[in-house]
Structures are given as C-alpha cells and as structure tokens.
Image (cartoon, rainbow, N blue to C red; front, side, top):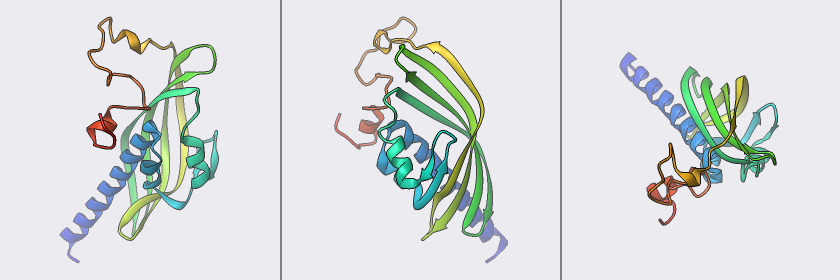
Length: 179
C-alpha cells in the first residue's frame, strides 16, 4: 500500500471508532439495547466504578436503567485514538447530564470525565472490548424544572418536546417507531 492509502485507511478506522462511540452514547441516553449491543463485542467488559462486569451484566444494568434516573444526555468531546493494527486505545472526554430522583424530587446533576476504551476491529467492524470510566468532576445543580411548564416561561407547542429520554421523539425522526 502507498502512503496515501495507509492514511486513508487510518482516517476511516478513526471515523468508524468515533461513530461507534457516538451511537453508544445515543443508545445509552435512550436505553436502547440494540444500539448499545452493536457498540460492544459480546466478550466485552466495563468498569464504571459503581458497576464492573461483563457485557451481558452491563446491558442488564444500564437497560432499563435505574428508575431514579429519568433522563440522561452524554456529550462527547475529543477522542485521542491510538491505533495499532486491529486494536486501538481511545480516550474520549464526556460530560453527562442526569436527572435523578432519589425520593426527594428530581434534581439535575452533571458528571465530567473520560472513557478509556480498548477497541478491536473484527470483520472490518470496530467495537469496544473494554471500557473504564474515569470521573474528573461532579456537580449537583439542584431541583429540576417541571418540563410540563415549557422552557423559560414559554409553553411547548407539541408533545414531542417531552424532555425525556424514554419515548424520545428522535426515535420517530429516525423511523424506529411510529409518530
């Protein structure tokens, strides 16, 4: 292979890795077992500090998710990708929002950290084989707003502005369920 072909292959591998991570974050926010599954190899393991186990154990933990966590949003930042043939070490910045109700009303919380993923390419497809979550900071913003009241004093004009991950309108947008 010439240098340009090698660079193109490396570029495509990096983009496939980024796509895998973005689809996983979306799947976790919607508690979509199919989207989460296609981002992991069946023999994958995860360590989130508050959970450590095999992929089947992780899937059972994250879907349907804790009843206390009614909404999440994971925003991914830059990824440093160290390719080595059909394996890669990837560090990705993440800020995750969580609406949590531990029995005293809903609160808005936010976590900043990094995913350390070991990824493998099998059959031309990149997936996670091992994930560690490193936590850099946490913030509790206090009592959540009531989404039924709209935003900034203005009411919502349609039901699809629910502010909820479950039953999210983007599933209709992508054609995964009827509207």
